[in-house]
Length: 113
Length: 110
Image 1 (cartoon, each protein chain N blue to C red):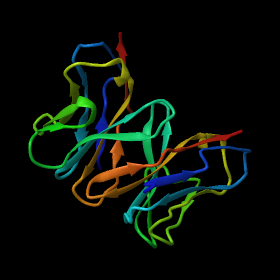
Image 2 (image 1 turned 135 degrees about the horizontal axis):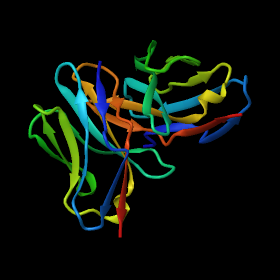
Image 3 (image 1 turned 30 degrees about the vertical axis):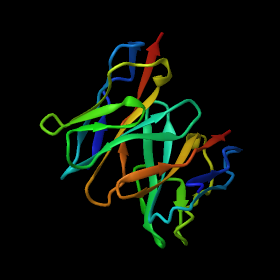
């Protein structure tokens, strides 16, 4: 069975500093990995995904994520945080078959001016 | 191109009432799914469908029914609402590894 762990419920970072939101996963077979962002009272917006290829994936709004197979991790990163990045971030995984997407519990990012 | 449309956006039900949450998509995606979002729990899968006439249970299916008579529509039915079903419900479609989510239905059961 697939699973995702987001070990931090909350991440605080100062504006302009780099940010990292952590995600580890467990899946049988090759993973499809995703990051989504949710702003207050909104649906989920797609940020980026890894299916195959380069381990460093670039996505929307300047975010990127690095796939690390040996550590089963897919951490979300951004070189310079903005106050507008404050939101709830979800990591998700599925295997390469036609299985449903499994989500982590989410990490609330707070960027302080 | 509307994508994934969920109705209603908000609903208050009394315990024991029934209702149907609607989900419609115009992208001709075969795969559709329903999730519920609760604080500290992330999104949990309720039911999913890989095509018209085919449905399957997810992680938390109890208290919910689904059917898929067309590619476009995937309604979620609550037969007898309970306070534990107070949540935000999201419908999603998938194609080629990309998921598209609706804007959600916020349901309160009193």
